Image 1 (cartoon, rainbow, N blue to C red):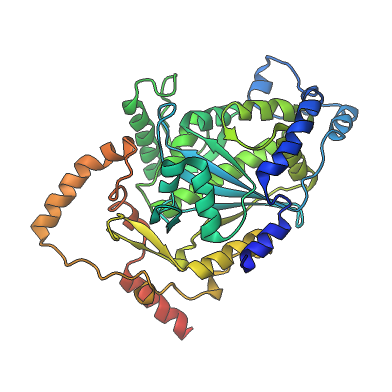
Image 2: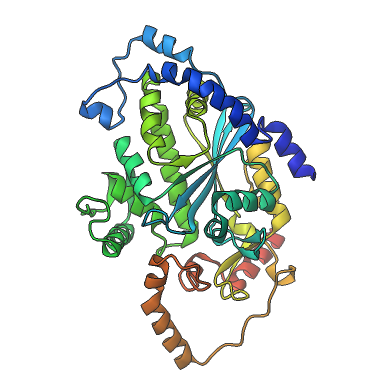
Length: 417
């Protein structure tokens, strides 16, 4: 066991989640009726929207609190959003995040992982990390992440488009801010899903009419989290996803403790997870007890420690990363409670790394235009059919990546400062 595994497996209380779950399942059956006894049965619009009930009697809250216990140490939960449009279809992991409940430092942390990160998938060699979910489901994805970053992941929760929309609607929506450009792209994403399947959401599509800060429903928040063809591509996309998850968690945290079983029950209807019901309630209680009012965030790999490379060894667009430094960043963040400081690292030197590949010779201008035209006509179709295609994001993702010349200029600036 290497240095990272020693650290992560010692700090995490669960070295084998499946074994510990057997014990928890035994207690879950015994305590589930008690845990759910605090559920308030109501048809009021306030309860359906997940808003806070400010009239809760303090004595009732105190009695409910006794039912819960803190989750000790550091717990990592893999959050996976899939691009599943039909039940049971094989899909990629559209979103990959690690939610960390750090009860040592009274912190909650969210680490988002770029889906085009180039890494070793057990049994499939080096590929994009998000392909592992399509090949082997949650087990292979979790195994790939644990081996890539040399850390343990205790639990997982999987949600598809429908489930995510329902969760957002259940808590009453979120307040988000969009620019004019983002508004147009958000609406395009909603329409795109509707074109895939008539009445995709089982309700009328609700497009944004204005830009700016506004309250959004589940459809709109889903589209906000998915759009990536503007700005800095995947970088902005995962930033928006962290924002949404952060606001979701903080809004759930504000819910009265006596409504925990009700809210958890609704969320469990929309996700696939190995988290026992009572454990989920304990996690929520831990966050509440630690008075967490903000959530620390990290993008992996960080901008400075990776390079976007197009048409890489028949893998399409990928992020090649500085593996050792990326592992240090994520372990410092998760286990040492140390924020990532880009000034402590040099720019990733892709050209001198073991992954460097000579770029292919440039083609003539008229050939490039024809290829772009052909790719533009087929890109959406391929993506929406969920094919693991090696050119799935080749032209789009480069919008957010520094060119080799820009990176060299930044390196020179850093060395002169």
